[in-house]
Amino acid sequence: MRVLAVENMNHSSLGQVGAALQEAGIEIDLRRPFTGEALPGDSREHDAMVVFGGEQSAVDDHIHPYLSGLARLMKTFTNDGKSVLGICLGSQLLARAHGGDNLLGKTREFGWHGVELTSDGKQDPVLSAAGDAFTSFEWHSDSFTLPQGAVHLATNPAVANQAFRIGRAAYGMQFHFEAGTPVVEGWNRTFETVINGIDPDWLRRYPEHAARHAQQADAAGLALARAWVATIQPAAAGGDRTREMASVGA
Image (tube, rainbow, N blue to C red):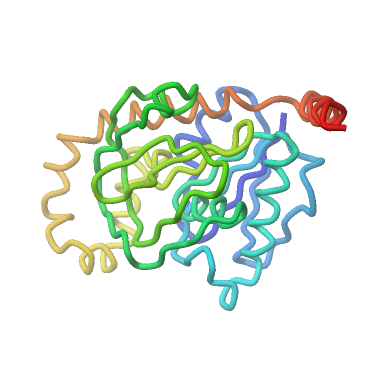
């Protein structure tokens, strides 16, 4: 099987999602459209799609004109019955693709925070893999409203919409569950100035934060990544399923 992976900035990382895809023997087709690299026009050559975070907002089309096309492509994969995963910016783009609103600059979180599942989340095969509540790394100031028809899966006191599902297996997750400890520590080095502007004590107290949260967050993130990868179905099966659904609808 083959998965389209989309990065939206330098120093992004496939992290635990990449590890789970490699474990499953799935080919990763990495695209970086912020550099001008082209995106596919449809879902035919891929079995699933994952979109990672970025420093831009989901509606910064004037700076990154590819964003509108990326949102449409996520909707195409969803409508074709293929697995989709949007993380942080990716979740905001998935919400945009299906008619949700992007909430800019209203929901800042940074560092490891708790995430709690809704009643629907506890029944979901992907979110429930990490337990009813878990810790994950957050780094965002934007969020989104739930699109019509979306299933609300996770929340916390700071951000009501931490995760949702739409269609068969299109997931938006506001939190960076892909960011295991090595990724977080790489971000600490690369974005030192930015982080000091967000939380002047973060780097000094990082060993304390990591001792308290990193191991649990890493375990939860890998469980979520493996559970999402398990939703991926070969394109032929997805095409057969889509045709069957269309036939029933007719």
